[in-house]
Image (cartoon, rainbow, N blue to C red; front, top):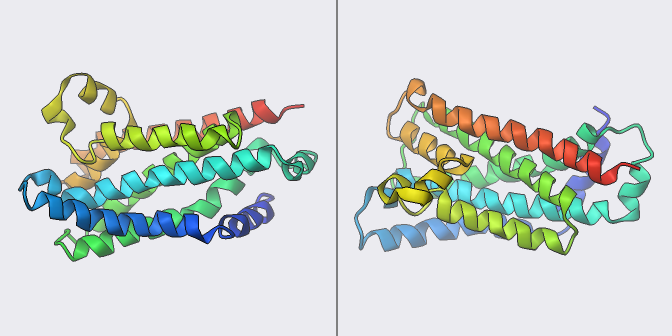
Length: 242
């Protein structure tokens, strides 16, 4: 538990920029009503509350990738982290210390999406816990992806590269369009990444699917999350060695 002191410091550093945090919270609440309004003119399944709530949640996780990459890249180039590298903290400790402060934000993003979704008829029953587990796992994966980008890129480069992740989630995550209906390269690339699997699994559960019906999708999400976490540790260790 040596990383908790650093995690506490990082938490304070994150909340020192309330506008960025507020944007990450408010954006999902504004986006969902806007898209549902558009969907009234195109009565498709993808524009229903059960379809949009997980989509907006996963899309908002892209901002966690952005924020986490920036704070790690910023600290990695500063004297602060240079001094900490002389302590007994391991690369795993550092990555955990940068991931933990973003978890409350992820939880709040999910809650906000479902609160807004409740006004439009999103399914709220005993299966919501499984939906939350799927989305939270994807959130951890996006934060871990931010650790990779924050380790590899500079403070100036990280925002641009992280923005590409947000675009990828939007276009290839199946947030606003049915990848299976589009088919071709979009479907192939989309389902080789975890975002579409997270959205599909959460949508399926909200629409009454059992655990067995979404287990494959969930394994994709969990597998990517673990890979992002481990790769983040190796990237941080590689960039800070010596």
